[in-house]
Image (cartoon, rainbow, N blue to C red; front, top):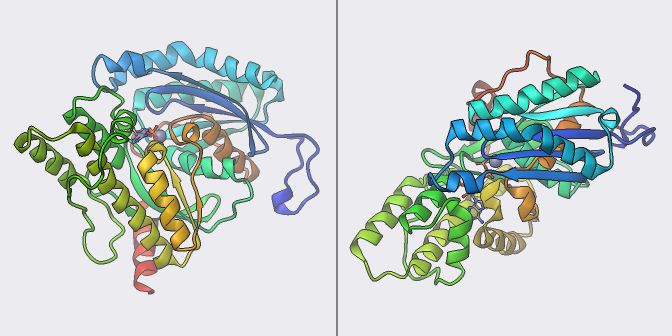
Length: 363
Ligand code: KG4
Ligand code: ZN
C-alpha cells in the first residue's frame, strides 16, 4: 500500500487520494459507488429492483439474488466510469457482509472478493447498519463521535451509541416489527403499492396528523426499546371499524405516532448518555414527518442534529464505501474466506447488553 494516511491520525496529509469501491446487495438494490478519502462520493450507482418486486407486493429473495447477479458487473463498471477511474486506481473494496438476504449478500461479497483478489487490495467487511450510520460521516466528515444514532430501516430499529468511528454500543432496539416494516405493513393495509413507506409518506402529506389518536408504545419509564406491532394492529382495527376514515388522515396519524416515539426515544438516549450530538440513518430516515419533527425537537433541546440527504438514507453503496474507508485506515481487512451473514449483530450481544445496562443504571 503506497498511501500514507491520514490527517485524522495527525500525520501529514496525503500522498495520493484513497479511492474505495463500495458494493451493496443486501436487499433489493444493486449498488456500487466510489468514495474519495471517505468524504466525497465521486460516483453512486443504484440499480433498483422495485419494478420487478412490485408485482409480488414485496421483495422475493430468489428474484433479488438473480437480479444482483445480472447487474453487479455493470453497476461496478458504471461506478468506475462515473468516477472517471479505472480498477487500478482503487485502494480497497468495501462490501456489506450482513445482515440481509443471504443469497443477495453472497453476490456482493463474491464480487468484492474477486475484485480484491485480482487487484491485490484489501477487502473491507462492512455491517449494513454501520454503513447506514456512516451516511452521516460521509455528509459531515467533520463530525466527531460520540454521537447517538437512530438507525431505522426495513429490518431494524436500533439506537446506537457511537463512541468512536468503529466502536458502538446498542442502547435500544425494537422488540417486534422494525419501523420500516410497520410503514410497509400499514401501507399495505391502506392499499398502497410496494414500496410502502415512501408511498405512505406521500399520501400523508394530504392528511391531518391529529385526526386519529393512535397509541404510542413508550414501554415504560425511560425504556429505549421500541414496539410497533400494537400500532399496526390499532391501524388495522381502525380501518375495519371506521370505513369512512380518510386514508390520508390514517396515513398522517400513523406516521405522527411513529415519528413521535422515534424522536422522543432518540432524545431520551441523548439525555441518558449525556451526548450532545444525535443522528438519524436508514431508509425510514427519508420520511418527511420524522425528519422535520427531529429537526425541530433537536433545536428545542439544543442538540446538534445530523440527517443524511434522502438519497443517502435508503440503501446505497456510497455509505458502504465511506465505512470501508475507516476499516481501511484501521487496517481491518477481511480474509478472502469472508462469509456473508443473514443475521449479524452490530456488536456482539455479550458485549453490548451488560454495558448497556451499566450505562443506564449509572444515572
Ligand atoms: O435502509 P433501507 O433502504 O433498506 C433496509 O435496510 O431495510 O430501508 C427500507 C425501508 C422500507 O421499509 C421502506 O418502506 C422505508 O425504509 N422507507 C420509508 C421511506 N423511504 C423508505 N419509510 C417511510 N417514509 C419514507 N419516505
Ligand atoms: Zn438498509
